Length: 100
Length: 469
Image 1 (cartoon, each protein chain N blue to C red):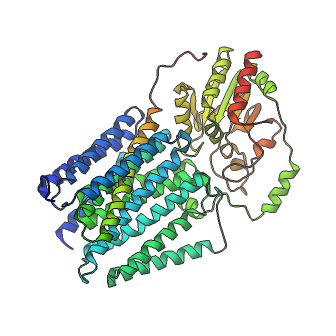
Image 2: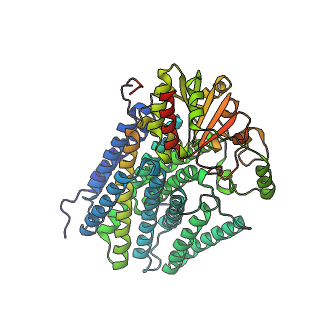
Image 3: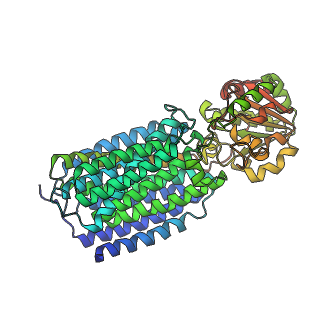
């Protein structure tokens, strides 16, 4: 096992604990927005797609990387925007008198 | 093209650290209502930083593929996120999740293709991660598409089952592991292609037998899968941002899936392999007994009188309300009743609608005051003192069989004890069973009455009738 791999595994294990710790007390009403928000965060895979696309040599590699960039960008952009739209609904508004 | 401004690996890794901190702070804030919206944007800024500084990586020598790809992706992402209706949010999340998984699988495939032609070049350290990323990413991609199809009702929402299903799935999974070993040891592209195709098929077969009502849990699980696929792509590329971002989602997503399952009193294994809501073995017998039961129909005018002269009314919203977009009409009705001195409350089941929190979002959109929304545990003791329970498009979450009948597939799921109210009026389009495909005994109760029609038009009729009452 190389030192790089060991470092990666260290980061991985610590991130597992943090990931569990930070959402342990989430109310039910936030389950959906939280799922949607973390859904956007795994769009970080875009960074990987960029690195592949920017250094691709063969045509097949370029094609795969291009689709990966498109997919990952949809994941990031769409994910954050949809989450924001959901959370917008939770905005506290001054409660008006109920009869209109 | 030469890099515009190449930063050292150290500098880029430092920006990844900043990004990781923002992602963590963002997720943390997302899990509390007052800070959730800012949390989403903090995470987005973290993501932006990671993406921007990746452009300056010295390994990137060509930009046009990235720029064009990101432009196309941004347009698709913005348009679909803006245009999607609130009721279709769950399937949109499924799609966004699926493409993320697809991206991770494609990265693995591209890396394999780059390294594999020179046999013996695949390092033992990264090949496992590469194959894992390809496998899990593909499963998440096709599984999410099936989840999308079920929620969009392109595919039947009912579980699709056949004899020996689990044996087939187990054999296919074993074959995938075999293909992984072959791809890793021979470094032949053909095995990688077969692995990807097999994993796509497995994703489809995994989600098909799961009923539509369980899709939120499945999407959450696939979300965690995609996170892990992204993290393993990070191992392949030795990229810290990917490892941290992906792992955070993998870990928090897994916990969130367990929490969602717990809200429905189901284990994840039960969701995945239980074929929940499949026609029970005694399907014919169950159908026959349905025929023997009778229900009572009621008009909007009669219901309006009942409501107008009640003291306590509990509204039980469900997916039917979301589909009909009846939330504004419901709020108007509640306002009229309150003006007459009726005490109106809303009973929110944790999994009413298609996703947890779905009803909260819709009612908040209609500006229903928060204090009127009650969780299941808080409202259940109130039902025996309630004059009228108005069930609007909710079904499975009110089925008393879940509480009383150990034979029912729903048995054990916590429900709203609507049947304990003095009167129950159920707004529904027809007598067809709910999303889980199970008949609801509530409809045949002596204190129950059916008000047939689209939820929105029925509520609007009630509004007009209450005004006249």
